[in-house]
Structure formats: C-alpha cells, structure tokens
Length: 129
Image (spheres, rainbow, N blue to C red):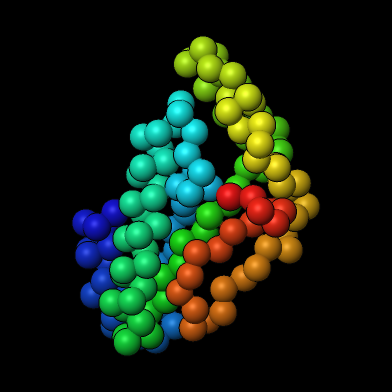
C-alpha cells in the first residue's frame, strides 16, 4: 500500500486539489472474528494508514477515503462465507451471527463523502460494522 501510494503521489500532487485516493477496508477492522484475524489486522492497519495519509495530504487538497462495507447479503458474499466454512471447518455464520447484515439495496443509499472530507464511511444498517 505504502509503495503504491508513494509511486502515485507525484501524479496526484501534479493533478492538484480534487485528487483522491480511495481504499476499500472491511467491517472486520473494528469487529474482528477469530477465523479472519489476519484479515482484520490488515484492514485495521489500512484504516489507520488512510487517516494519517488524509491528514498529511489535506493541505494539498488531496482527499483520502477509506470505505468500510459491512456484512452484506449477496450471492457473491454467501459464496465467500461458504468457502471459509469449507476451508477452515468454522461456522462463519455463527461467528457473524450478531452482526446485522445489510441488504444490497442499502448500498446505493450509503453516505457519500463530500469533496473535502477525509473520513471512514460505513454502509448498511445502524450499528453495523
């Protein structure tokens, strides 16, 4: 992440104010589950990297946004959950049972960052990671 960002920074600075970096995180960064501890740690690091980068690049007008989708019920996500169940012998549904899943139609109404904001966004229902 750091290497890629540093490689692109000269072009972003040249483009000037209004440039943006968007990273995709995960709700597991703030609500980790045992079978995905490594994933949760990496996403938490990405969140903090984004916050620090946003503070450093704000004076140049470069926006940094970290999007943090939560648990969403879609066929693709169901396949991913099933593959973890199969590979790890863990009932992932039991691990995530207390997390209310978002419905795909809520994604279109998720809060959108303003052109001048640098913050973490969450999609889905209230209280959801």
